[in-house]
Length: 325
Image (cartoon, rainbow, N blue to C red):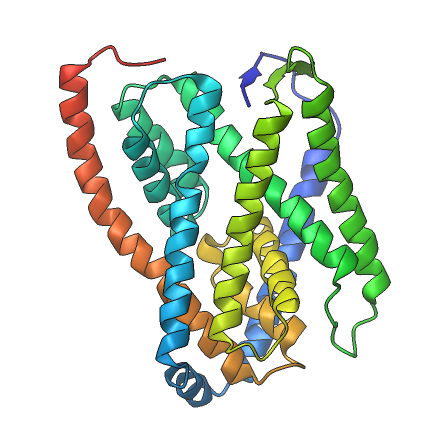
């Protein structure tokens, strides 16, 4: 997807302020939930639960983590197809892996955005091409989220805590809205003739329906792998679709609060939504193992790969100083 921004006057009204206040209120609510939960946790029980996770479950979770990171590393290849730049497959996947690992641990601005711009510019891509690649990867990620979350909420709603006022019907409505958003994007790709749209000073390029379906399949599989990891680390004590649903809710909560890595947010959401289904120690033990396997180990590997990629970029720029698309 290409996004071209044209100069325009700042939007009038107080809507940006309302959104900012809403985000801070949400952050405050999550922070209060984290503090309240932390005071009631028996950390010895958490450590015991962590040690009790069978090695086969840890190994299986590590395999799913590797598959997820490998799959996400191919997202920017779709952006390469859309933009037509000529960087090699291994180089693109390396940049995407590094960005994703730092994104998980340090937040989207540092990982997903800053590292991509740094590495791709060192490899010879111009800012517009980098923006298009980044935008298309983000679109791929959240398209799969919309459809998968919509499907789970609409057709396999989780069992909410007894003291919650919201019931399964509310989740089904939310799921239907998410599915409608995904369907709208696919319909747009299907009916578009020139695949170029202009909206409020922005120029948007949509892919073909075939490319959009590939985006959808890759992203849905990636989110499913993430849910599968936590499900295995919980030793399958809770149905997979419920674990997946909570993981999807936690992902959005982390984005809204802007907490790097969703630290504390992920745990608070799982405790709030599944605390009536499993002991706190079991939930937190599984989530600590998940963070170690999916966040920290890839971060170490990404840091080492980043150094190697910087050196590789320097060599490539010497040989192809004008390489760009």
